Image 1 (cartoon, rainbow, N blue to C red):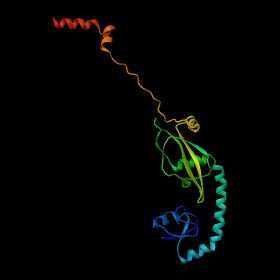
Image 2 (cartoon, helix red, strand yellow):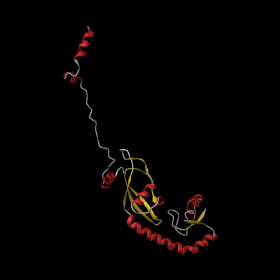
Image 3 (cartoon, rainbow, N blue to C red):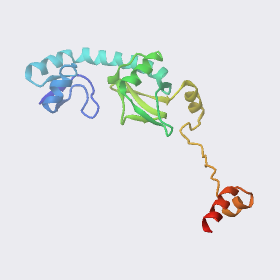
Image 4 (cartoon, rainbow, N blue to C red):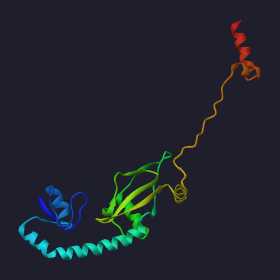
Length: 197
């Protein structure tokens, strides 16, 4: 399906570009989100009339996003999760969890703005991108820990997933030493002697 982009779409094109996309992507995402129009003569004429207005609106939104970017970029947010001794989470941290943590931190975001390359499934500090505008992306750090205390330790640089080297102490059994110390009962020896007669 051919569509006219109403805003910049990552890996697709700039505002005003006519691009060919899969029908499902256009019907389920671009058209309902008002990010594009079907490419035909009427819509092309409508876009040309509204182009100046759309570009002005886009510039205004970009300035607002850059102001938020200046405050948000480089911030760290804590997410508390249960995990095993090796640091493997019981589940994962999703885009919704990240958006909630950033919103709790004072920046209004939704999960559609969180760009997560792979799911977060371990404890530690993870870099995450938040798309404030199609042209403005902030990087934040997610501190995934089992408790607030552990999060503070991780922020200082400690590795909380390190398993302490605990070597078990094995006692070796020495038969000669056991008999020398009288560890074997005397009654057993007498019974054994009585059986041999």
